[in-house]
Image (cartoon, rainbow, N blue to C red; front, side, top):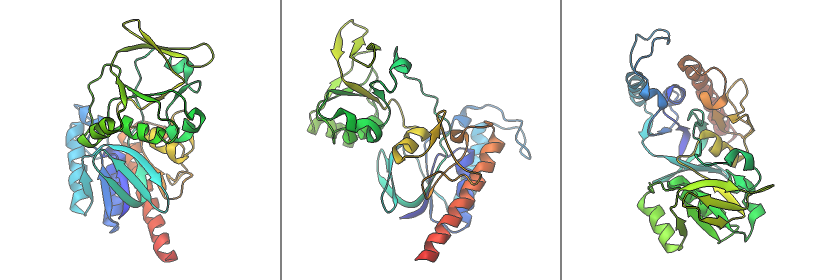
Length: 294
C-alpha cells in the first residue's frame, strides 16, 4: 500500500514526488516517458542552464529517488476507487491512499473519418460511463494495447458481443492480455478502417478494402490511456478535455489531484513544476488528515 501514486514522470510528476517523498510518504511514480524528452534544448526555465529535456528529467528522477521515491516504467491502463485507489498497469495492480495525475494533455487523434461527428452518438471513450446503454448489443473496442483490453474487460459486464478492432496496428500487449483474448475467444478484426458511418448515430464501420460491418457502438481505447481517460472513469469534472482542479490542484474526488498540462493553462515547465508542488503539498495534507482520523 502506497501513500501516494504519481502517474507521469514529467516536470509536474517529478516535483510532486520530490515533495511527497521528502515528507516521508511512501511514493510511487509510474510512467515510461515524457514528451519533454524529445526537446533538444530548453532555455526558458529559470535557474537551469540550457540543456535537453532528457537531461533535465534525469536530474529530477535522481532528486526524487535520493529522497525515497520509487519509480516503475509501467503503462497505466486504468484507475478505480473503493476504500482506496487501485492503479492498474500493464503488469500489476497497485493500491494507494491518494493519486496525483500528471500525465500531460492528451494529444492522440484517431485517424478515422467521422469520429468527431459521431462522438456521443455511438462513439464513446468510457465503458464505465456509457457501457450500460449497450447491454447485449454489438460493440467494438478500437485499440491494440493493454489499455484496449482493460476497456474490453469492463465492457463484458454489459455485452458478450464484442469485437476488438486494431485498425491494422500491431498488437502491443503483454502475455496476460493475449491469453485473455484467447481464453474468452474474443473476435479480432485487424483491417484498416476508413470511416465510421451513420446519419444520426453510428450504424456501421467501413474498411479501406470497401467491406463493412454493422455495429451498435464503438468504444475508443486507442494507444495509451490519457489523463482525461483516467479521470473520466472516476467521475472527475472535465472541461474542454482538461481535468478541472482548484487552486490546490484538488479534483472533485477526495484524494485525487492533478497537475501540469492535463489541467490546461500555460504549457510551460515552470507552470508544471509549480502545480506539481501544490499537488504534492495537497497530497501530504490529505494523508496527514487520514492518519489523524484513524
